[in-house]
Length: 121
Image 1 (cartoon, rainbow, N blue to C red):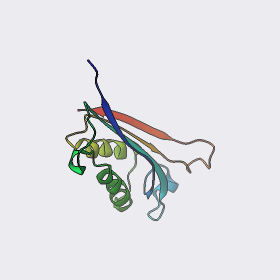
Image 2: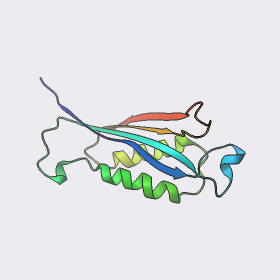
Image 3: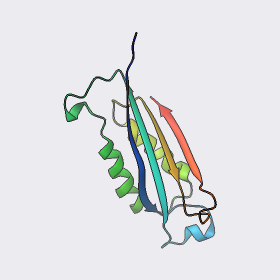
Image 4: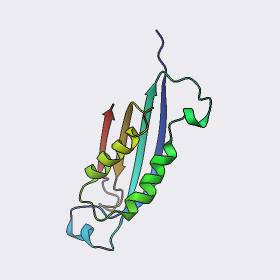
């Protein structure tokens, strides 16, 4: 039996948010650049016939770019990753998703902290 999977991804979403546990990261005016990658899949996909057949990646993009900058300070990237996994799975077509969040500027280009997690319905 042949099975087909559809993969929908958003790569390199850039957003600034108040995040981190270090004292310098907690300053109320301090925002950090985050790079966000999201991947969503669904099984047994046939070519979409209409917009209603498609996984809505714009909803995920809008969540990251409007909700995260407006959030109060968040200590952990893990909190943001977990939240975004839930947002992805709000679409009933999505059966599996992966979220990866990076803080590219925290170590002045010498290292990039990354938190990644996947969730299956």
